[in-house]
Image (tube, rainbow, N blue to C red; front, side, top):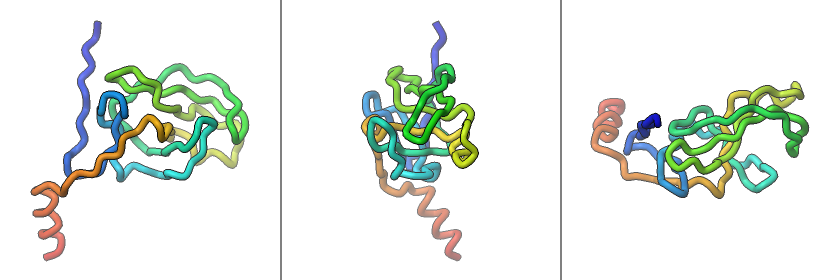
Length: 127
């Protein structure tokens, strides 16, 4: 059995986590859209993520047509979180390529207090 090490995002950023095990998944800065609509409800689109595994790609008919997608899951608790586009068969949807789509019901949004290092950086940038 292979031991998977969990990645942690900096405490000074707003993060999105798995609602089941609280593993960090994405930084708020990587959020593309919160208004995407999937067949199971609201979905959040991210550029990059951590602690996420990807299943095999398969063709599925989604709300916007035929796409090759792969389920993505939490590496820590193995819960299916959403999907990732593999290749797009409709040219107008090319923007979705390599974007991670999380079901809103599977995410926990965490806002943390600004950390000491961020306060120092903000002060230095202001000077």
